[in-house]
Image (cartoon, rainbow, N blue to C red; front, side, top):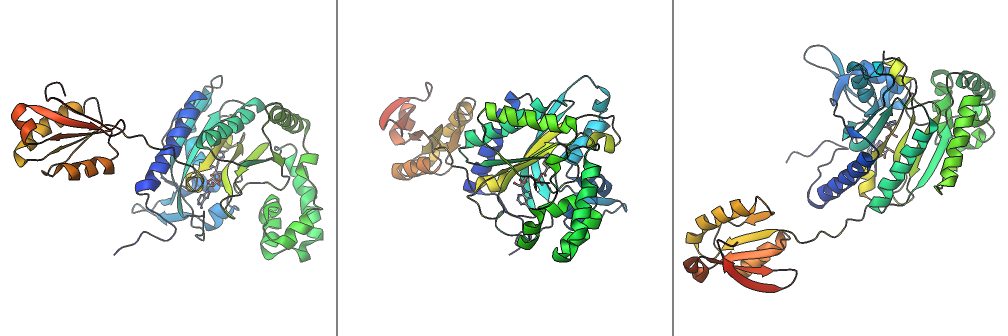
Length: 404
Ligand code: HAM
C-alpha cells in the first residue's frame, strides 16, 4: 500500500465536511467585507519567496519544497499565499490604479518542509485575505474584526496578540539598539540566536528557548521606539479594539516568521490545540508591492490555518435533505431512473440501482441522510404511483408518479 508523504494528509468523510464548512463560512463573511476570489499558481519561481518572505527566514532558509523543473528553472511549492498574490497584483498592473482599492480572498494548499507534529503539517491549507491600496489603520482593525466574525460564526474561542513592527523610518534605529543589547549578552544566548544577531536580529525576539526569553525581558522594546506615524496608528488600533470590546494582548516579542511586515502584526491563538496554537496570523505589509517591482501600495492581510481550526470547530447538525429513491422489483428501475433525473433538477436525489426490500431501502435513505425515502414496489409499479416516507415527520403517503 502506498501511503501519503510524511506530514501530508487526505481529507475524507467527516473531515472534508468540516473543511468545507470552514471555507464556506469564511468566504461568506469575507464577501460581506467586499472581498472577491483570487487564484494564483501553487508553483512559483523560488526568487519570489526569497525576495518577499525573506532569505533569512526559517521558511525560506529551511522549509521550502524547492527543485529544478525539467526546463532548469528554480521553482518552489508556495509556502504561503501573500507573495504570489502580490506578484499577481503587480502582473495585472493593479498597482498603477492608485486611487482604487482591491480586496482578494483565497484558499488552498501551502507547503513547508517542517518537522511534522500535532498541528504542524508539511502540506496544510490556508484561507486568507489581502487588501491593497488602503493605508488607514481602520483597515487593520477591520481585518481583525473580520477574523473575529469568522471565528464567532464557527463557534471558536481565541485570544488576540498584537504588536507593531515599525516602518523603514523607525525600524533601523531600533534594530541597531537591539543588536547592541544582543551583542552584550550573546554568550548567554543560544546558537540560533547568535546566528540571527547577524542575519535577522528581530527574529531573536521570537526564540522559543526559555533561557533566551528570560534574557529578552530586558531587551529594548520596539513599541517604545516607534516613529510618530507608527505610534499614532498603533494607538488608534488599540482605541478601536477597546471601543469595539475586542480583547487583545500586546506582545512586544511578536515578530511573525515572515520578513515583509511593517506596522501592525497580529496572531490569533487558541489554548485548546497544544503547542502549535496560532490559528491565524497577519499584518500590514506596506513595502512588499514596491519590493516586488510594483508602485508603492499599502496592503494588509491575514491567513487562517484550516487544519488547526478543524480541531476546534463544532459542526452544525446536518439536516436531512432530499430524496432517496429505490425499487423493490428489477423491472421498475428504468422508470425510477427517469423520475430521479427529473427530480434532480430541483432536489438532492440518491438513486439505488438494485432492487431491494423496503427495510433495506429505509436503511439506505438513513445512510445518505435523505429526508424522503421514495419506493416503487409491485403495486406502485402497476398503478403508476410511488410510496414515500417523510423521515422527519414520520409520515407515509402514496402519490402518482406524475405528481412526484
Ligand atoms: P503564517 O502565520 O505563516 O502567515 O500562517 C498563517 C496560519 O497558517 C498560521 O497561523 C497557522 O494556523 C497556519 N500554519 C502555518 N504553518 C502551518 C503548518 N506547518 N501546519 C499547519 N498549519 C500551519 C502567513 O502565511 C501569511 N501569508 C499570512 C498573511 C497574509 N499575512 C498577510 N497576509
